[in-house]
Structure formats: C-alpha cells, structure tokens
Length: 395
Image 1 (cartoon, rainbow, N blue to C red):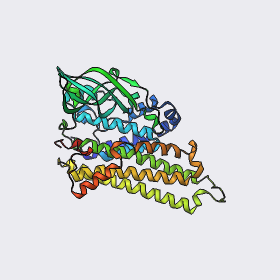
Image 2: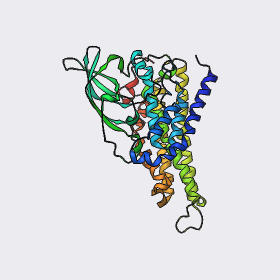
Image 3: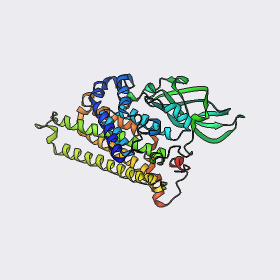
Image 4: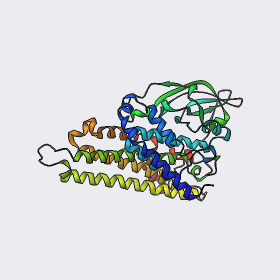
C-alpha cells in the first residue's frame, strides 16, 4: 500500500504535469474550436500527463488519486480551455469503471495505460441476453472525447432471449472499432469535445464487459466507495469552475486596456466594474469552497469504509449544482461588465460564456437538484429521484 507521502507526491506530480502542457493547449485553441475535437498533440499530452488514469485502480496500473486532486486537475485544465477540461473530466470519470467492472473485463480494457473511454450512461440501447454475454444494439448521444477514445460504453436495457424486458439496466463496454460515429456535434459551446452520437447494431458484448451501477465495487479502495454519479457531478462542476476562472482573468486583462465609451479612464478604474469583479470573485470562491467541503467530507467517510448517508450524497449533488450556478453567474457578471468588447473572440469572454452555458446543461448539475435537496432536508423520501441510481450500491 502506498504511503501518504508517496500519494501526496503523486498528486502534486499530476498537477504539475497538466500545468506544464498549458502552452501546448494555448497553441491549439483555434484548432480545438474549428475542428470540434482535441488535436492529437493535445490528446496525447493529456494521456502522457495521466489525466485519463486518475480514477483507474492502482492494481491495473492507474493512479487512483483522491477526488480533491482529480477536481483540481480538471479545474486547472478547464482554466486553459473548457473543452480540454471537459474531455479530461469525461476520460477520468470513465476510468472509475476499472474498479466496478468484473476483473477480467477491467484488465482487458484498462491494462493499456494509454486507454481512453467515451460513452453515455443513458440506457438508450438494448442488450439481449446471449450465451456468455449480450447482443447489443443502440444509439447514444453526447459521447464526449469519442474522437480520441479507444473504447466506448453505453447504457442498455436488459432484454431476455424471448424479447421481454427485465427492468434492469447495465453499462456495456465495446471497442470503438465496433461502433459507427455519427457527425452530430454542431453546437455553440464546448465544441472541441467532439461529443458525437455513436451507434452499434447487434454487437456481442461478453458478460465480463457489462456492469450495473447497483453492483458492488470490485476494488476495495475508498475511491470506489463513493456513489459514482454523485462523484461525477462534483468533477463536472470543476469544469465550470475552471471556465469561470478563465473568464475572470480575461476580464482583468480587458480592464487593463479598455476605455469605456464616454470615459477618460480604463475599465479597471470604474467603480461599477470593480464591484462586478468583486461580486464575481465572491460567487466563484464561495461555490468552490462548498464543493470542496462536501467532497472532503465524503472522502473522509469513504476512507473509513462507511456508507454515505442520503444527507452526505445530497450535499455532493447540491454543492456541485451550486458551484456551477455560481460559476455561471460569475461569468455573466464579467461578460456584461466588459460591454461590447466581450462579444469579440479576442477577449475570450464570449467563448467562456458559450462553454459554461453548455456545461451547465448537464443532467447532474441541473437546477432541479435544488428541489430534490429541499425534499431531502425536509425529510422527504428521495429514493425515487435521479440520485437513487447509486442507492442500491453496497458501498
């Protein structure tokens, strides 16, 4: 077992590695937006930095970092570019299945240190029971990072051989070569994620490459004791935090050069602009603090090998939603404060606005979570909400 000192050094090493590729990301910003994917050089640098192996078990050669470090890495990359951060987040989160899949399937997929996975949890496909596995057919949207991925996963409804639905859903894992990628990602924000649809028709998937969120984790580490989707929500939120930090820094640069109409001084000297920047900083820092507070608390529980209560799970969902909401508000504030200059690509504010609005549409951080959180705090049974996807997990 790794010592805490060794783990701390590994965490710092990963952060240093992703910071070192910032100039490379900056060099490819235009290509990321134009081509609607990560250039090979950027995707390769993320692989080399270990961005996609942060949640992969150490037993499979992964890094198995703590959730706070993973969030910091995603946030750091998102400060450079939202699409890069989003792809790192998706690839990292999909590494978690190395601790959930049956061992044979996990080894088959994750033994390759350069492996990257894309896919969709939504059970849009069907998996008909067959000898040793399933015959899978379906089409899935929003496969972020699919253009640089080697494996895909898609949620499926399980169907008996005779055609009757079982009411069970599982994630199916298959090589990207078995699927057809459909060019559907024509969007306003996060263009570089290449989040296209993909489809498969009657592909065999062995049982070793199928897993349910209700299945107990195979790996014993505390990282796999935290309910999967709740943890995903917190990492998704860090993309928004990074984009917002990018926007605030861009606004400060604008303030150093712009003279507002009918003003003799710079934007940075305006009391209104100063107040808006101060408010934006407060929103961003407060949202981030709540998120990391909730995540540290959940991590401490997981390290004690204890089950997270509904209250603990609720705080993860709520803090992720609040972090995104406040990050979005911070970007809105500085975008408006920048006046007409904000609409120009050169300022980078308009790209931040498009990216964070797209990121905020993800199901796990939608504002409907406030209603469920309120129900939880009132003592209402929330076991039938979207949060309950993890509720049958034994962890």
